[in-house]
Image (cartoon, rainbow, N blue to C red; front, side, top):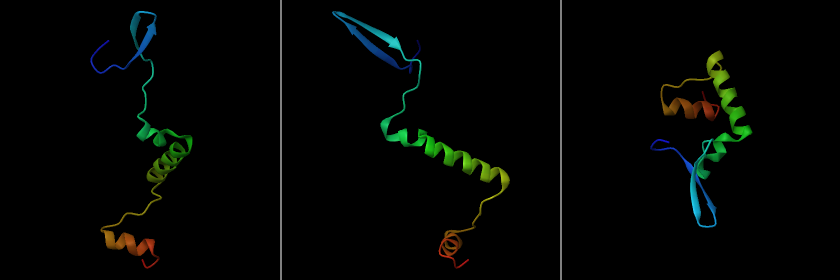
Length: 71
């Protein structure tokens, strides 16, 4: 083990063992990112970037105009 490794505690009678975890635990406030739905949207966004299917704006006003259909 090395500093920063996660462990679980196993308690049996009067014995406590530290057991290294084999998987990385995700903090509850970040678990939304790892849902299958969100990961599908991440893959779609990555694909759009690769194929150039996105809009780039020079400033916030241009973005807002486009969002409101005035661009």
